[in-house]
Length: 453
Image 1 (cartoon, rainbow, N blue to C red):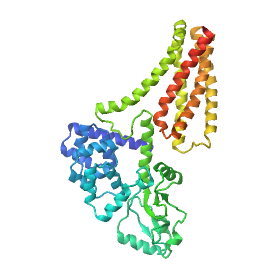
Image 2: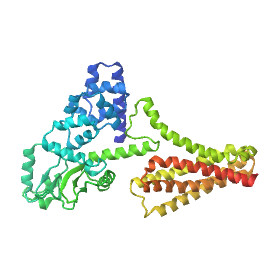
Image 3: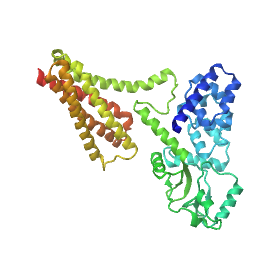
């Protein structure tokens, strides 16, 4: 059985256990259960419970684990947990966090508490974190960890081994050591595998990989994630514009970005924010969703207005009202297929101005082929159903027109929105539905008015 399915089953079982304990278990049983979980598992359970149950779980979580959980839950869930957390516990929660997790936590702390936490740190650590907080969290600088192991190129691997033994521990997810000069400029990377497999007398300069150029701190997080996927990387050094080492990005940071982008793609299609709390108060959720419901209502009225233009035609030929939804529905599905394909291509940087014309022509061709095939099918069905070959042919013609327009709209709308800096996943679906409904109704009823009346 795939590991992803096993993980899903495990998370579901943990949620069932937590729910049962909250209903029938004692405080001691709840505490023992929560203490047996990894922080990520606790975060998953907290996001899956309503506000009252969530607070019961949160009360039994040790302060030294709170920080690791807060950086793993969605922003809105984290904000609700911060409201019921004692200030002293929050300060304790920051004590054992790695620098990248600390930065993530500081990003969500309210200002009075943020200053209080910063004051508990030493001057050096505070300066490092203030620098990290100044970076856009959606760039490599915002993702990076400040905990790095650096070595010089002119020492031997034996010296490096002694240094590591004396140090006693390494930052989490360390798969390599970063080689820098005396001014902290990146020279290369020495993997732990090369460290262990080469003779101890080998110089670092001879064993390191000098082809690693590092990641600019300004690189967008999405591009960082793509680079990790394409090059199968576990970590990458982050550098300033002058080549000076600033930190490193690790695979666990990238996994978080991939998850956020997947959540964003799914939620944006419905006009929602991926950071929203699933168990937010009813009125809060209703207000958020009302905006896109209102937008959809306007587009629905536009489609109704198009239908109203052919009121006389509908009164004369009632069968048109029965067949109208078929044209609009088929156009909507065909357009959504193209829209989804193009939105994904834009997200993966597979679509640009260099291949946009070819993609548009290809989708147009697909629309023509599918339009002709399904037009033939529905024309036969409608002809037999209503005993009218003319009606069937008109339905088929309208189907071809709408599927072709749907293909063009599904490809061009997301590209146009992306060029304007608007998220195609957020607005593309509403615009596409408007186009396919209006074109479908206009084509079918317009042709019927011309040829049947």
